[in-house]
Image 1 (tube, rainbow, N blue to C red):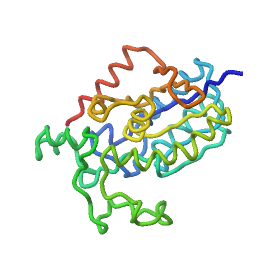
Image 2 (image 1 turned 120 degrees about the vertical axis):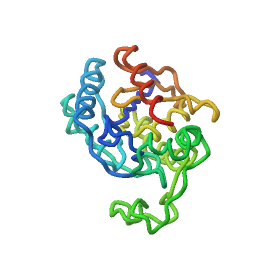
Image 3 (image 1 turned 120 degrees about the horizontal axis):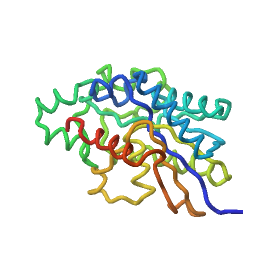
Length: 249
């Protein structure tokens, strides 16, 4: 029996706020029409790659949940178990959440916004607990201890709250020989890819994960990367990643 473990990562399809170039974070916005098509296309790519999943992990945000549902339905795998957890949520953008990226760049300067978007350890301004954008006002987080709810996050923060879920839930599934699909967000997946590929703190700013394109990992017995690749046309994947990089900031 092969000792390889099979893991696929999928960033949700374009959301309505992706389309409008708005900092989304933990705001629960739906997929756009294009995002729904991206999710279905991801399902086609994964079917063509002869992938068959045993379990799916998503965040608790609808754009990830719906992407998983559409992709799995396209694969005729809508029946497989799905686990959802807030630790896979997108990064909380604090006071930037809900603001247009281009307008924010005009207000604060493109260099400052780039730091907030891409720095590993510098978070945007925080929101107060009384701000409607704070997670304490959302029923889905009502049973969590207040101290784990972010008022803002940098990518380092995302990694620190995401990795316990990786070790406690995803790794055990991989260890039991399950083929695992993780459907999450640009920054929660950047944090996971940083861990898997051992990307240095100073280099992670250059990583751009396109929406709706599966990334296939083969891991060894110690969950170290043997190989990884995007599914689909390489030029199209590169163009989609470049489009993420070119967003304001």
